[in-house]
Length: 335
Image (cartoon, rainbow, N blue to C red; front, side):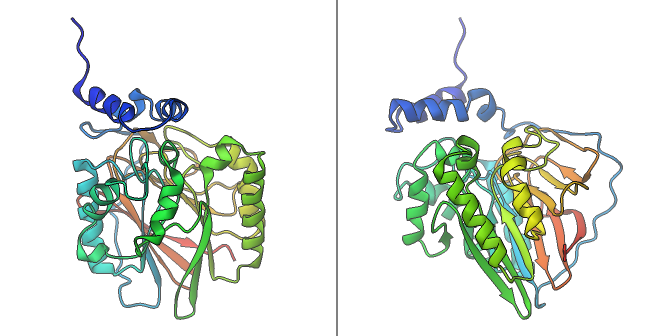
């Protein structure tokens, strides 16, 4: 007699007992298909296809310098031991480098987001996971597709309840400055764009992005979303992002685009883009990934990115769950 996998039973119980409407449950099921969620890599190793021999990564310290420093992590809200290991590595790097903030690239809560601003997952999968003193920093977050399976507006509302949780709207911008160096981050709701790229709400977001980029006087312009523009991982390039977002980034001088969605780490520089693509989606699970023609680096099995911006370059480092630097390079400013 065939039996149901315990983790699958737990997942179904979570969905059924979530209090969502039938329509929302169906969206959650489609977005969180059992094969995708249960194969997210918590208990198995994944691989990197076409990986060349890697050079030893020589990390640098920017603590105490006039640089804007941030950690970047995505796809983290599992409550699993995988997430806990990556969180420990983030704490170790943050204690040394003293970043000013943490940027989340979405899918903040699995499998179906949160149901209200008082959802206990804010405590179990965020506060408790990132409780180390070095991580008591402002978090700036975007929404992912799994967040949309629940109540996405509850994550916005939570900003009014928790001073470290910054998501004042579904899309927004914020700036960080140290000395003469300023970095403006443009936080996008790419799930909105993926669902209804021609809707009035999506068009309003794109109009906001165009206006905000045009008006920005920051040293660095960095756009952040959940879905990728470029990827050689599970999802590949996203056509709706290439059509709707890329032209604006090229036109208005964006230097870096950061995202999650692929549960891996990738650094891509395509000759067709004026910006670099940094993927950091290894906070709570992993998938197979690969090197492509324009890959500068790719890795899987968990991790996060660290960036330090000065007036002419952004130093990028990727770390694994043991807090070991596995890649380091400088990303030059576009202008």
